[in-house]
Image (cartoon, rainbow, N blue to C red; front, side, top):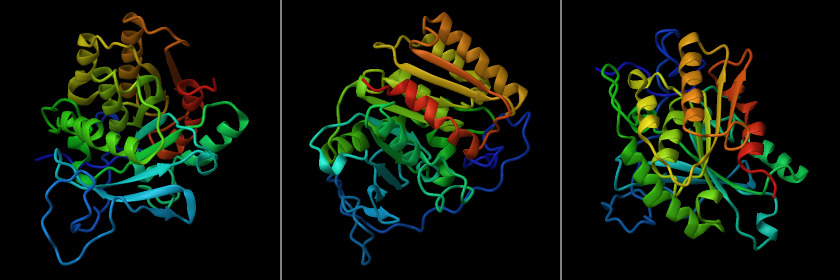
Length: 316
């Protein structure tokens, strides 16, 4: 039986269970979905009631630059998921194409009403808009992929933990690279290539983002790795990093709050030392921030959106 660590983002969720209290029950899943107009041309079973088409997003709180696409369906994983897209301030008045940053746990990024703890969210669009208008970062599209509740642990873990299970991140990777990213590139004005494509997340979302960046550096060249659960599978990610030879080498933002527990901190310190021994250069292609007083929660991660965007997508 799996431990009840399905969803992230209470202050204790998917931090090291040896140093953290038990995570709360996972939030409810979306209602059982009906069929949708499938942009991937898969064969869908006919049903009497149809949910919104993924191709027809709704505006979040009337915001024409924040669009919610409903119930993305994959050939690789059974659960459907919503996807939220944040457009830069000049998107509707320009013909330009933009870099794209994909972030895990999309319900925690833009809307306080959908976050794991209501009102506690990353406020990503407000921060990115400010940095773009200040000229601190290049204008970017940010795509948030909602987690799927009880399947989150399975999808966000690259290797199986002997006690907690998991280990289907390779299928989640195929969903992102073979289905969702091509759909985003087709429907939005994006720049292609690893220098223009980032991926990130926190906790297990940080773990899977590091895995994706090191295993597919030809696609993801900018990594935001916040409070990664390096302890997962007895530190299996450390062995993966030792074996990996990514070309081109992705640019990595890595961080950890110093109120997240001694084991979490020690494992992240070890990960940073390992990456530096593998010739990531501090301040050049890796930055490691150890944040005094920061806990394992959305409010803490929201404070790091500004610095990780500045490092990964600086204005040209």
